[in-house]
Structures are given as C-alpha cells and as structure tokens.
Amino acid sequence: MRISIIGAGPAGLFLGAALARRGHAVVAVDRDGGPAADGRWDRRGVMQFHHPHGVRPQVGAALRAELPEAYDAWLAAGAEPITFTLPDGRRVSGGMRSRRETFERALRAVVVREPGFTVRQGHVDAVAIADGRARGPVVDGAVLPSDLVIDASGRSGRATRAYGPAPAPAGDTGIAYVSRQYRLHDPAAPGPMTNPLAWQADPDGYQVVVFRHEAGIFSVLLVRPAGTLRDLRHDAAFDAACRAVPGLDDWTDPDRAAPITPVLPGGRLHNRYRPQPGIDGLVLAGDAVCTTTPMFGRGLATTMMQARELLRLLDRGTPGDFGAWCDAEMRPWVDDHVRSDACTRLLWTGADVPDGPLPSSLVLAAAEADPRIGAFCGDYLAMTAGPSALAAAEPLAREVYDSGWRPAPSDGPTRDELARIIRTAVPA
Image (cartoon, rainbow, N blue to C red; front, side, top):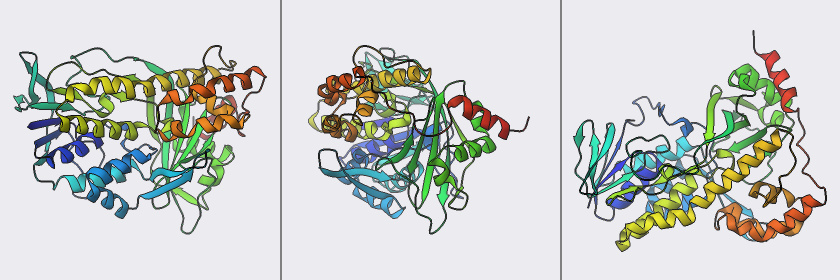
C-alpha cells in the first residue's frame, strides 16, 4: 500500500519504518525538520519533548521486536535498562532510564535510512475524503495520494479533528506542572528513590517527582493545582522550592548536581480519549487516540501498545478492528486517570476520601496499610493488565479507609507555605 502518516514523532517514526519493512511505501509528514546541523532540536509545538517521561518496558519491547537497530542505537546513546521485583516476587523489566529526546533522536537516526520510508517536512492542512474514504493528506495545499492515512500527529493535531466523534472524556484536569533537567556531578550518586522509575513525594497540596534518565541526567517535576504556585516558572523560585522539600534537596544539592535547562512550564493538563473516526482508510494512533497526565509516565507506553496492535491487524488485513481494540484497551487508562486526577485535585483542597468506588491512586496508597493489596498491583503498575486488575483490591482498600486510616503527607512545606517560600525568591 501507499501509506501516509501525519506526524514524525515516536508513533509516526516507529510505524513508518515497521510498515516499510513489510513492503509498503510510507511517507511521514511533519512540520519539524529534525535536528539542526548543530545538533539542536527544539521540536516546536511538542511541549512534552523536553519534559520528563517514564519510559516503560513496552517501549523497549516494541523496538526489539520491530526495529532492533533502533534499540541498539538507543543503548549506544546512553539509555539504561531497569529491572525490579514486583510485590508478588516476580523479577521484571522496569523500562529504560532515558529522556524522550534521547529516545527520539536514536529512533529517527535509524529509521530515516529505512528503504521505502520517507520523512518529509511539510504542513498537513486536512485529509481528502471522497466517497466515504480517505484519499490522502493535503500537504501544503496538494493531496498526497494514499491507500491508508495514519494520523499520528499527537494531542494537538488538527488535520482530522473534524472527523468522527468528539474526544471523550474531554476537559481540563485542573492540574499543571513545571519541570527542569539536571546532571549529577561525576562521581556523585543518585538521590533517594521510592520506586524503580522515580522518586516521589506528596506533600500537602502538591506533588514532586524525580525521573532518572541516562548518563546521570534527571528531571524534577513539580505538579500543582492550576492557578497556584505560578512563580515556579522562575529559576530562582524553582531553586527555592527544591531546597525546601526534603529529599528533593538531596537530589538538587549544588554540590551533587547542576541544572542543564531553564525551568520548563508544562501548561494545563488534559486526559482525552478519541474514538476512531469511522472513515475507511483513516486511522488514529498514539497521542491522537489518548493522552493522560504525566505523573504515571504512560504516554510512550500506550503509543507503542497501539502501534504494535495496529501492525498486527494490518498484517491480518483487519485494520477496521483497531477501533474496538482501542475502546477496550486504551480508553480504560484514560478513564482511570480521569478518576485519579479528579480525586487528587479534591484531596489537594483538603477534602476527605470520596464515597463510592475508589480510584486507582487511593487503592495503591492503601497498600501501605494492608500488604494484601500489593499482590494485586503488579500487573497494573507494569501495564501488563489494565486498571480492572485492581478491582479485586478495591474492597480491601475501602476497608482501610473506613477504618479511619489516611496516607500521611510527605515531609515538606504545605502548598501555602511553599507559595510564601518561592514568592520571596522572585524579585518584585
């Protein structure tokens, strides 16, 4: 087939090369021209490119299965495999320590050399539809004739926005964040970790996550209710916050690490699921299908899960089944985030644990009080099973909360205290 892909991010690059290896003629179109001659790569319009990602095992597994050369290039660029033990005793892959930029550079460097796959710089205005079928993307005013169009343009893509049902659930989570990248001084060791992927603290009214990357690089993520702690976008205020939060002060101690980027504002966050448009020859993939807030680091994993399933269905000649698969396998993750994020935002206001079924975030937290809950968490945390894997643990968690137990806030200033601290750090 002649296949056109809108977007040359992780989904577009991975699918493009994998489909070319199956004998298809593939063109991926993206406004971004790739890294500049001096190596700089701003990726304008892709806010999350420089923000932290949790790179789960689904990403490496997809590369090893379809593009092993890209996996080897990623390792050569410094990516570090992680293994850890689940609560049930199983030893499993925990993914990779890597920045998204490092992953995407390695992937792009390999796939642009793939015969039958072309990455073209241009702007996709729309998709031409005739007789109920997609005929190709309209690139800079001209139709690129195609037998199949894959929209991998991400959450902000506009080319197919008018087709099919509206995203659901759609809306602002009321949560925003800022991040910054650091590098450990040689030979300084990493700071504390609360799980194999990251260090996390939940003081009263906000959240802090440190993601380890490759070559001693790490990112600090400060998550807050939208409209609060706005001064964190200033480097001096961010530094003051890092000094004020126990554990984070260890990670960012100037004697052990130095920032390598300014503070990166992340904007307000959305959880969104978009059903397939129901137009022959047009498929959505990656972030065009679903986006979730970054605290659990699921974005690259859901993208690669989709890509591998789409490849499987195309190999079978049944791409029309992809919509039902996404409804069954991807939407539950979005719904899971909607419920957990709404609960987090509620608890940040000082409210108590809500009535009714508990969101996943509270089920996981209750494992601290009832170790039996941990036995149900492993597949959910590894994303080898969907959120329904926690259903059997929810009654146990409800018993914990009905007993009066509540997770204690992490050490550190409250949100109001942190606001005062960072306000004094920003010149009037």
